[in-house]
Length: 189
Ligand code: AR6
Image (cartoon, rainbow, N blue to C red; front, side):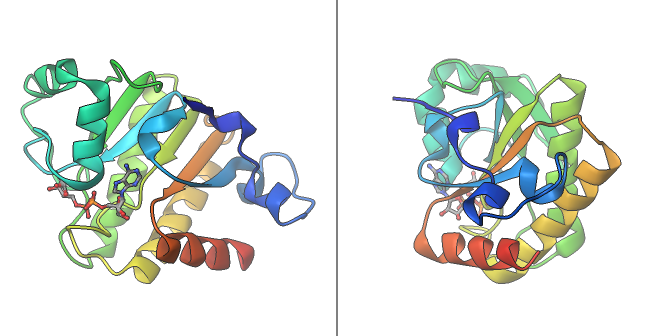
């Protein structure tokens, strides 16, 4: 069963905060679970440079989207670290998959670039609702707390610079640690 992202409360609503319309906390949500279930315009994939599938969230997305996703990925000629490319979502509830490649290890500029490039590609394709996994924090080994700081800064800045382009950004958490880190850092935002 798929989940409509607009039914997931914003962080502002969750915290009982009155946040101005269009402010950062009124545009972002935290979702705990599997990103492949989200009915959103685009989910972001934490891929590698080949864009030919792999483990972690990449493997889950390819399994759920079906073999047509890999067939389209083969036409893309890979993706540089920090860049992003878009495909259809095929059997996923999401319309598109935006494939990005985060850094291996702690390289803040490349992580920032992966999020910004994904949002740029989203905007270009009319995506209004988007969900991100915690890019680079699994196999690629970026420390989760440091990554969260970079991500929130990058997304807040992008949304401020691109007012109204995106209606909702969902941060998808797959484990207790990420959920705690995002909840704490967003509450202090
Ligand atoms: N939904 C949401 N998040 C998930 C899911 C899921 N179904 N499965 C895992 N995560 P990783 P990376 C979380 O390793 O570090 C692949 O093999 C996971 O808990 O998937 O960017 C690629 O092909 C973690 O918080 O991505 C690349 O080679 C986060 O997703 C390499 O791994 C990212 O973990 C990319 O490594």
